[in-house]
Length: 170
Image 1 (cartoon, rainbow, N blue to C red):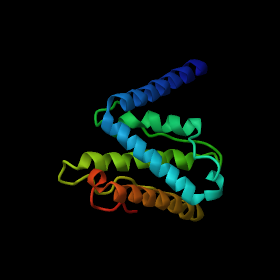
Image 2: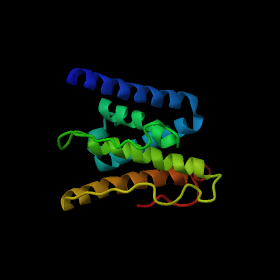
Image 3: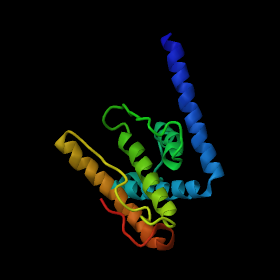
């Protein structure tokens, strides 16, 4: 019974990842947001740890990429069936959880800007809330999120026509 439940859950995750890949193939705006989010993630990784990426570019770990891909449809489509699903990433410290959810945040922020050009709110406003219960963790995570926002701001300044005139901010 447990095996059958786990296999069914794995199949749902596989289908969601496949839907994210299909969305990238079919929607140019989503694909552009994904590409820009990846550029921002690479920039923030290099800023945080230049020595680690002196010889090779930053890369996603498989679970990180899977996490981002399975969340794309529920971010990009208001009617996605898993839009109200809450995901939990459970890995030990240093396992890469932060990059996984920062990737989702980067995609969300960029897609809002790209889509906001035609809306009165311009895709601005609060898009993400982060909450941490341990003070030291909060400071570290705030620094990492702020580095990502700075990377997004660099992209915006390079492409103000696409990403708007208003800066990204924490």
